[in-house]
Length: 330
Image 1 (tube, rainbow, N blue to C red):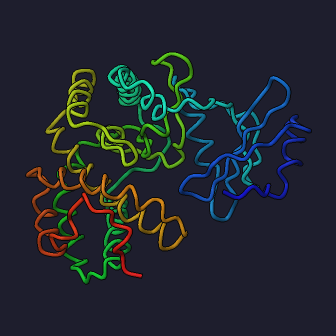
Image 2: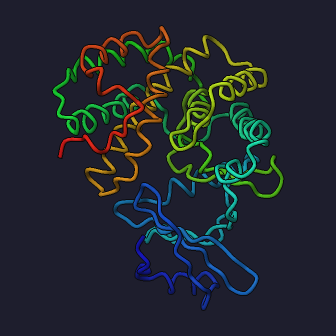
Image 3: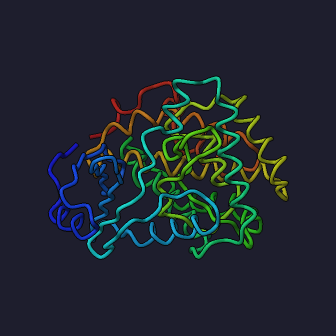
């Protein structure tokens, strides 16, 4: 983690009324964004630096304000200068859902139910002012698998067949996302904060929100790339969501479709983070994600994509128990 402060940070803080505050850099994520805890006396805030041209804070600001206006707990925006990538936010503290459950696993059901309650509320709202999550975006995302994972494994694969298989699998899903719900797209245990009480949860990392299918964020939560969610917990929470939301159609088939789509995308993204961005630690998550992907592929709705895997990915490369990082092509 770089400890060098970005140019202009002190000027922005002074303009925001936080001159002279202590600035504590925090560990980064998979993007170009950086975060800093700002402390002055008893007061504290969180500073996000989303520097252009790599980042644009406007989608985050739009989503944060929409969530707050609709009763969902995003951090309040205290000050911003979006053109330069600066956003000063309410500090949600340090208690993430993931670390809390690592320490208090007996609270899993209660914490996950509260997280699902937020998704149910999202599904009851008219979709926000966000772009539709359509076929072109789904296909762009799954191509990350063939663009990054397959070359890193030295594989020559049928790219056109990959696209055709996904078009066939995803076409039945599209009617289920009309008119659609707000989809946060990265809704999991490392992006949910506990703000005091298991049912008081705050949201992070929602700047990529789109209008899409209600199963997407549920998959993101219950098929977590970074935290093991036991299959029985996943099943209980899936049933809890269905009891509360009463989704239409073959919702479990759509859940499997989006699980496979998301997990294939994530494998590609994690390899890209290693190859392009020099972040090899994300390779350690791939065995978990691959195991989830294989579970999703077992659903009959995924038959065309499963057949593509059988024809293009050798069986020895589909073993989720192996640590994938050591055997990637240079």
